[in-house]
Length: 231
Length: 231
DNA sequence: CCTTTACGCGAGCAATTGCTCACATACTGG
DNA sequence: CCAGTATGTGAGCAATTGCTCGCGTAAAGG
Image 1: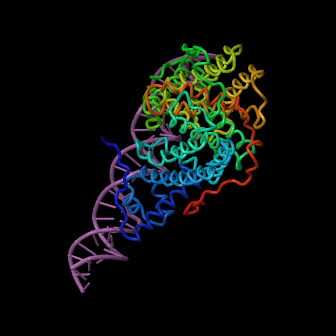
Image 2: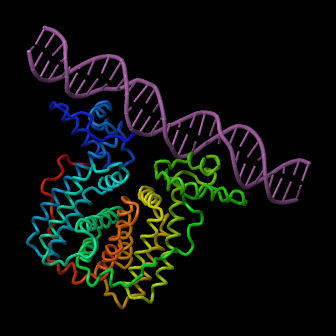
Image 3: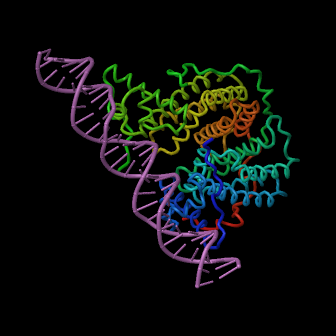
């Protein structure tokens, strides 16, 4: 097994070193925000942080670990915000609550689109088995709480566990917001209503039952196939 | 302007060279499918294709151009399949049609998850202004056709142009399918109904009007803010 | 034929980048 | 004041990789 361990190599014990670690993390975020993944290399980050590469590698065993730390920090921030927002809309009608959560998501992503997109990008590429499970499941947990808070407006989901549903909602939100953040500079006015529609539609989908869609166990085959079979 | 042009450097004129180009493209797909982006470098691709790097650079001005060609080829394949599928469900009820399209999407992605994911990954990273507009808009066009075919079952969308709606549907499909393809080996049984629910929900969302969600022009601010402002 | 063009080759350059290591400096506890 | 430890330094190694270029070989075509 040559799987790189992403744990911190050494925990900072003096105030001095803690500041160093913070400086590195901040520099990482700064670089990511300014130049996306293009300038995201350890030499550059150390330079921006005002420390030497050696110091960086004293606290992060490798570049991936630094990226993970950055992702985790951001996820944590998001989770806290989402939990607070969920709590604050617990007494509102479902639609109103969804609308506010959607606005929160849009604001978060548009605060720094390049940064957010870059982190998203890294998250998929990295060998994170359960490394991000905690902060990720905190997001899922917040959504579950929201669903619980509005259960009287919801019908039970015939397919998929609540966790899957919550994860789907998060994914849909991420992809719709990110797509609009990728291009222009500001959020287009149609984004918020579209997002609310997507989320509410999923939750309240009328008369959508896989069993009512008819027996189409036979799927489609694409008519031409791949000319050269990719193995 | 040092923007790299992605056009083909030279068009193959003999049968021999055309075969070379094909070999390179196939090798690129093969490498991407086997090792994802890890082994996706021009030396390796040339080796797998059984040609020299020099030959590769005779037809592709740079690595990005090769990636774009690969993406374009795959998008085209997808567009053809989608157009055919849309045509074949034009007389079916909306829900039934959606169900079949969803199954098509799942099958396509699960045919080669690593390959599809890797292409998706590259697509975002690359400097493609309008380079992929044609094949992308073909996908959007197919969805628009589908919406047109079932307009009597649909209410007009209050927010967002039809193009935006079509794009949203594509994005939602991609992200949900990809998420489930990322982990396990086979598609979980809940994927299809969840996907249909998401798509149908978006299209048929009952009583979801941004204007009915109340005036919440004041958004949320996250309660703690980023500790170190990322500039 | 023989010139011209198309095609193919692959060693290797230049640049990037993750990371180490030998050494210096700051801090701590006794 | 002095071990012992924690922290910081940065030159530079080793590996990767995008890409060029000088030189062959095959086809075309007159």
